Length: 69
Image (cartoon, rainbow, N blue to C red):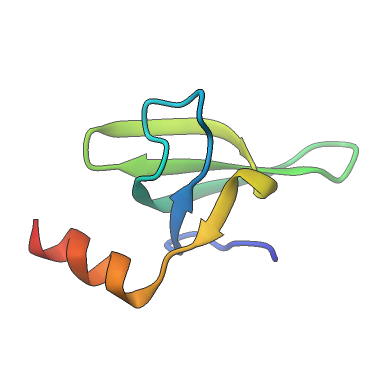
């Protein structure tokens, strides 16, 4: 599954300070090898160069919960 700008996603990267957090895709970049990486914006910052396999589409509940915070 590929993601587009403004998609809400959950980062699954135990090495990131944003692991498990829901953010918004702000940029997609494709390497010359065809690999796509993403920049994800979170409430407290952003994470760049995120591979697609470290992202999961946010559930509606995740999006609603973030909106209430």
